[in-house]
Length: 96
Image (tube, rainbow, N blue to C red; front, side):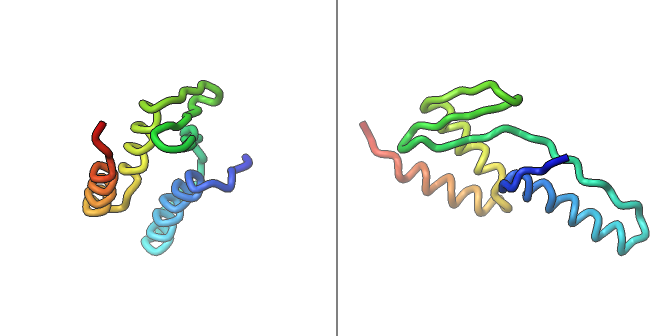
């Protein structure tokens, strides 16, 4: 199975790698890597984005931009990082 050279794939591989290092040290069986494509988000400029998921279903617009930001917040390593980035995003919003 061909694994794409993307951050999404690397993020998933890191979880398997960490588990397998622990498993090897503790005499447990290793787990083979299985890539799960979750889709893609692409920023299209200020306040706009596109999303492709489930292979070929696409959405775009400002709502997708907020989904993209939410997905990135969930991938931050700690709650502190999530709060810092979320606050930066909120504080950069300009009133109408």
